[in-house]
Length: 126
Ligand SMILES: [Zn+2]
Image (spheres, rainbow, N blue to C red):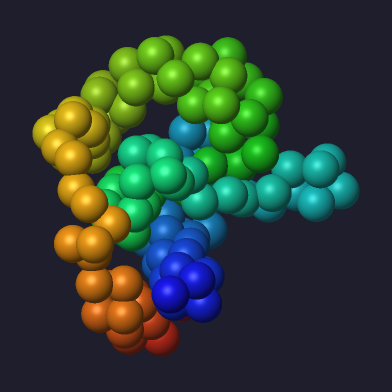
């Protein structure tokens, strides 16, 4: 089970990086390791819920600053981040609010199937 979660997480991240063209969705920067600024795939619905964790529609690529440092960074001010998301990516915002209160048991998640699907998509992600 855990190894499937790990593999699915890796594939999910690869897809998110590819979908955003390896640029931050908020500021447009590419990774600048010399400035300690990397690109990080953010889980809009958090990582705790397996139900939301592997939706690629609930992923967004942010640079380290926009992810964890700036005023609108989700790890600084979740409310400000969600307001920004609602303006820039309303479909993601709407999906998040739709699934937020939906309780899905981990037993209802077919992690092997999710892993297979994500790895298949990740194989074509560049
Ligand atoms: Zn950024």
